[in-house]
Length: 281
Image 1: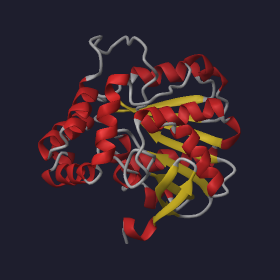
Image 2: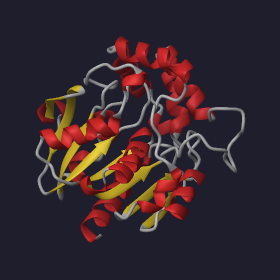
Image 3: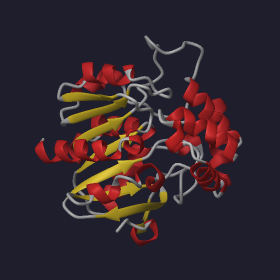
Image 4: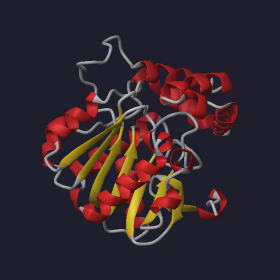
């Protein structure tokens, strides 16, 4: 029977505020960190993964501050690495595997460089790697996908959400449904404080105040699995090629017919990859 998010939703108080998270399973701790899109939450990013991964691991999918049902913060106040450590401490978790999509992947990378003793495995899906020139991406600012993401923050209507979801995935017919687009729109509109804080923070630069320092990537020693969609129009797979070249104990899986949401478009393969990697490394 499929998990009901209401049955596994929890809250915990940390120094950075109230965190909503979803918890299932037992075994080695596995933290799932969502991306930055409007309406993104631990559940919306990982609804198709939590139950399968919980068969082997103790899974936590966290709404980070500024998203979902967690506390509102301004862009200047965001430090999701600090928050993740607070979360581990609050739940008495010494070390966990971190699985991060996009922004969540960037935060997982930074955590691996700054708190190597708290991470056992590093798994990323489509993380940006700082503000650097790209070989294959356009040079006129944000990617096509990020431009749609920003537009959806300014006006999270179902129509703008449809445009965003169509950019995020390869298989538009399956995933950019009216029901999904309305659900994402409703989730975003339910927290106008999150929308306002993100939009007001845009003139100050990227939504992430801190980025992993590229020169520290070679210091990451934990087993690292990089998963990227070949058809990602938000963050080009060249970012994961860069990570592969710089993280010593890493391997890369590039999925064809896959956009920015590998865990959503290819959940069965994603769940198998993650389970095998954590159990056997």
